[in-house]
Image (tube, rainbow, N blue to C red; front, top):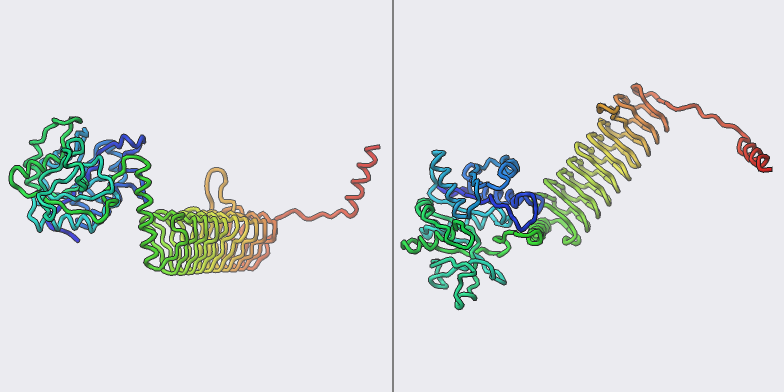
Length: 473
């Protein structure tokens, strides 16, 4: 959806003092993504990224670097002097940049990551339908203590007479349940007209955007309210504990979304599933699985307990056995991984291939039907189809300065405990004898041995014991 003549400003300049953290508040993560990125993602469903303005201040360079790939624009608030001051910076930005001023400006908070595109659209729709100068998103929490309250002209009408902060509530207003979320939509001309009239005559000496509501009502302009469907959707996070509450809510929502599409998740409360993860129908996730980043899993897979999969793509009918760790890797259909395999970045495992117990891969292509089932390290290697890599065989890819590639053709048999010293090529159909150290290329169909000749000494043990017994006398 794109609502014409609407722009979105996201307030992301604050420090978040109560978090006791060096990181900017909006860069703390829930659901595997920074708070601000969640808000931008929701906003982008309503307007194009170039009509989203992030107001940055504290650690501005870090915030800019973290989200600039989204294509949003940035407004600098060098001093953080309140929400009203943040919008004053937006007004100044339009004046200096010469960009056209949108007819309506929707204001979001960068620390409210559960806000849904549907809710943002609802605010804009109500704002336009009611011909309001200001529209306020509200909520009704179980305990409204501490929040600014919304005073309506009538319970059955959207019109608002005032926003009253907790400390300013009169005794008969304390029971008012509806709170201000800090999310608004303005007719931009009405907002900009009032911004310069704000003052700092308050306990914190800041410019408050909430004061605009009273000014507009006093001028006879309409201020209306619309309630959010869920109070969690409008809650920010001022402490790590509050942030983890939001994280749990988001992850539970992700699990429910996946289960609604046909994914079986045993004990979803034990699984850590990031918000961008996608899983196909009839896949089974066992307890204590972690699916992180932009992981994509196909249909009819089974991901067994204690596996951690990050930014990886997994095909259909894949089995990931217990305790596997996988990062930025690709697994083709019908492959079997684990238990306790470690697939490091750029591992590409082919169709019906097996990567087994305590096998580590890095920047490797393992062809269709190939197997490395026990205690292998495969790094910087291109391995063909139907290759058997015996237990304990490794590629020696690092000479202390540079990495080198091992190339193994189709239908090769690599014997147990072999070391392939790169750069080296093993051509199709070759055999490597167990325990060999291979330093030269092996032609197709050849058998390569690289080990010392066995020497057997009959009677050696008895002779050694006799000598020891003599020495004791």
